[in-house]
Image (cartoon, rainbow, N blue to C red; front, side, top):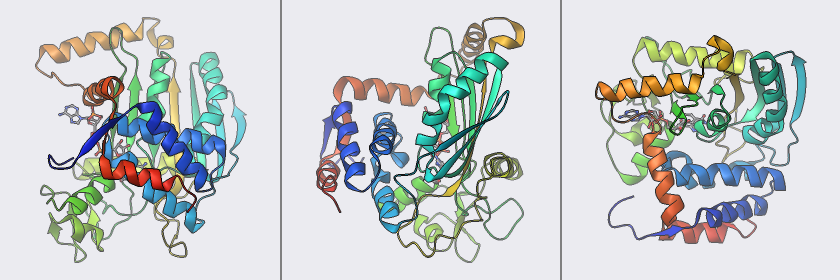
Length: 341
Ligand code: NDP
Ligand code: PYC
């Protein structure tokens, strides 16, 4: 937020409730409104602005376009000793994850590992929110979700991949879970939109314009250009893996497979998501959380002061103490959106 933008601090519970009212007013089922409101408010609380309240207009235009079903009832299937499958029924991914989580955890406790394959789902959010709760229960979780074609594979000349994030969470003795969550593109699409809105240039190496030429202009990327994978061929390989695990295995769409052109206003990728959840103490029988704490201490010892997730935990603590920071104008706009559109 720029220094000149007037801001206020809103209690987290008030933000959740305002977002819940918005989703309800725009046609989602009460359960969906509850889950999405908590998810989106949590991203805002933790300073993940590319997936916080910034996303509300996109959620609402998508609901209005008929592209996503805000009333969808996810169908959970038990398909193996360590395999759960959910058809999200063209609804959002988070209610599908919530519906399947009790069975998934039961299987992890029994088998030591289990997979959750979500298909026919829309994920428009930060991915760490899907994995952190497992680590809070002593489990290790990895999740992958694919999105919409906007990333040029390494060596290619046209976009094909989505921004395809990977999130990982592990318990840690004596600290908050170790969590990382990163797009496999050089930058998340949401951050390109924010840079365009605020008139900032991007660093070199993030994307190309409509002619395929390198650009630092976020608007040129949005106007027919594309993003690049992070780390050249290595990020590109990870992005390919995300397509295969999040869509290939689950039965969801690859990022290039859906066509939303008949739904003006649609913004949410209609794809799939995979979660792999492990009971880490089955590995060596040692307390894994102590092992991860040892690793963190060594990392600190060699000079890595900041772990992935640390920034968010600091933001979260401040938001819970002082309220979630919001621009005055945005808070007022959210108030207006609680009225049916
Ligand atoms: P970032 O590049 O901002 O951060 C990636 C990870 O690196 C985070 O875990 C972050 O921790 C950590 N990190 C950042 N800087 C440092 C540092 N200096 N030292 C150590 N760790 C560091 O994330 P992205 O821009 O790639 O992704 C942003 C969000 O966009 C993610 O939440 C992702 O899930 C979401 N997204 C969602 C998509 C979807 O389809 N739903 C598609 C693409 C992205 P910290 O959190 O503490 O900053
Ligand atoms: O920021 O790249 C992104 C993104 C895509 C879908 C949701 N977020």
